[in-house]
Length: 420
Image (cartoon, rainbow, N blue to C red; front, side, top):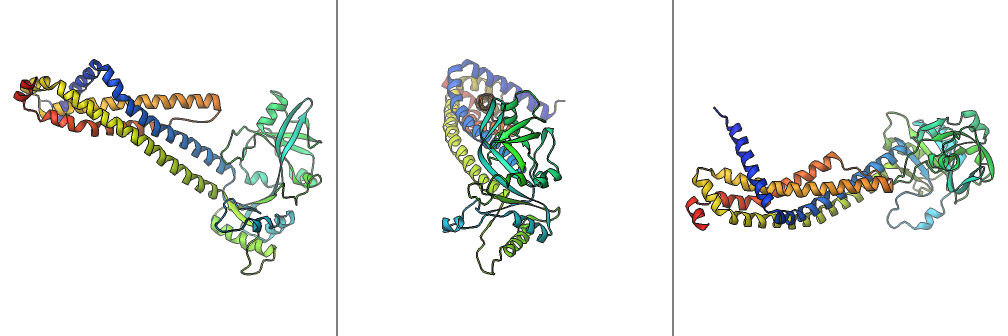
């Protein structure tokens, strides 16, 4: 005895074959019907694919900023309302001695580093050179806070840091430009006209939305940099990085840092802060808001295209029902049930929309491949977005095809045959 589920599968198979045959016979009409759905799915999924790639890039960039890390700087990363810019301008820069005092006074600090970025530096090796490289001068704990990997060599030792030894670690792009396939470790390069021995090479990180990739940077010891640059210059804008001990929440850590740094700067109660405590969540939260707006825009643009496509599918299905009125009458006269007729036309609409969705997804996949090859940007069509595109297509097919399919299923066999 055949079970209801087996009968359903049989009816589903026959309905699918009827639908495929109808789509094959009306190729031009099918192609035109696909257009709206294809454009809609392409618009929605392409926006989601781009924003997913950007979000992954941001997460990787924020992760490399360090976990539970606070940046003590002159300038905030986000400006508040009605705050005159000249108040920020008149703030003193964080000092090296302030970093040392902070380390002694703040008990929840796991690691702290003093950083100075020197932009637009010329890095040379023999006849090769790199323009506009960024040189990072940092104290010893920099490697405990900043997340990075080395492809060769090592980080500088505590003795090299304290003594201000002329050693450097270089980014992957600098290493490739200066040395090609040769090994940079052990070679001497010149930065700012001074000789440095290369002791390590950073692993290639790629471009980052938060602009903190080490690929085009060189890292030197701060104690050496203090002899050649003015750390009190606004052009260099030095800052302090502090990382909390495990188990210390970021809010608790910031509160302790705030109190300790206000004490270091002898600020009275009620007096405004003359420094900023920045954290990676400020960037990620702001960018997440931007991504939400972009996603809404993708839904709106794609939604209009899908709406037009849905109306097109519904119109085509009404025409299809009218053309096959006689066939419907004969099927019902031979014993076809209402749900068989309903399923037949409903599947036709769903298959039509799924084809449109698949074409849209294939276009997104092709463009993502071009982006990876030509732009060196990691744009990947995820399985989640593929499922979302197919689900949207199927739902639009059900909505667009239900009314025509229902009308077809309710036809009287006698009237349907006469209408033919």
